[in-house]
Image 1 (tube, rainbow, N blue to C red):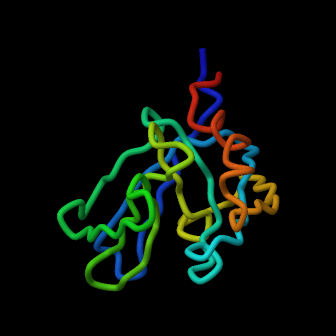
Image 2: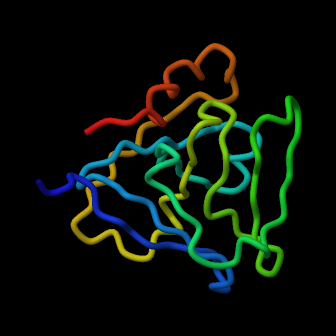
Length: 134
């Protein structure tokens, strides 16, 4: 049986940090307006732990946390790009920046707005995204 997911590569600007995420042909992504995402332009594709892997440069990652300290914002120490991170809404998964994927050919990305400024009221709507689905 063939997997409904394809591994897609991505990384930071300088190429020092690389990752792969197994994504279906159609993904939902979130454009969040919280203080962090609004400033960095991060477009979230949240995946389960099993569908994410760092392939290069884990030792180059710097971590930033704030507020509750649950989210682990990871940046390339060289170029400063945040290609992925461990989100507070899905600490059992990863959030990949759609803008950091190398190639989106054959991938349909449906971007929906997410009201992260009112995170406490809305975060429950993301919890299912890091769960295993066929």
